[in-house]
Image 1 (cartoon, rainbow, N blue to C red):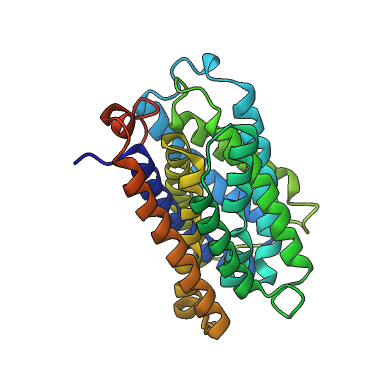
Image 2 (tube, one colour; image 1 turned 90 degrees about the horizontal axis):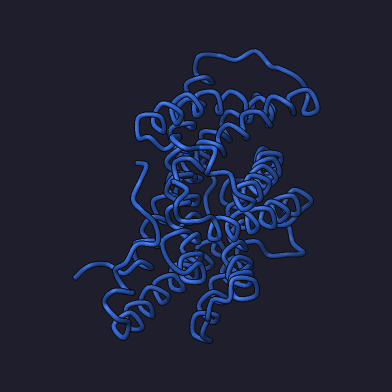
Length: 306
């Protein structure tokens, strides 16, 4: 039985969250030595080279003059704002903590999809999303040691990323996802170059550091491509909660890479988040059976990219 567009989108989102979290891990290791501007620049140079070659080989840059659209520009603004705020907070928070704060994004995006995109969101889906966010609050514990000024910076990143995701959904179908990924990577790299001095200037880099950033560049490319494909594939209100899986990846990597052992609240919150995602998937299977076959299996755009 062919997968519905929503299930395909959720699968893309899970893959994207894995790529982004492994990228965050390498970036956090690098951020212990260099500032966010230098990190964005060096990682971006690797990423821009790779994705530009791929986009050229796939023909995603052909007719690029016809691809510029207000929603592409709005998405770039959201991506730049979200990245700068996230990287500024990253060195000062445990990976699992900052990932937990960012899990406010599915709720923000779903609210935006209902208010601005006219998506129909039933009470069961709202309940699953709110439950997942409740799991986030268990982990973050506002008002206690888990929340500080850098958590607020992470929340500002959430606001920018919500704008980015809503704009992605409104990008016309004829614009290749790989074109959007390429322009995003280029703009992030330029932003890094412009912010090196404000963030403290250039720091000499070791070979290990360069290797970390090269690996992060490959991972962030996969993340960009798959998250764009996810947000264009199905209903945002269904797909967005699968961002919660990033927290599970982050908790695992925090343990194995940084030695941050999760406490009981972290484990309980993660369990609630997983349960909310599984329930969303179950509801999609139930609702999907009642859809016409064409609606369940049709893609929202022509295939392209990776």
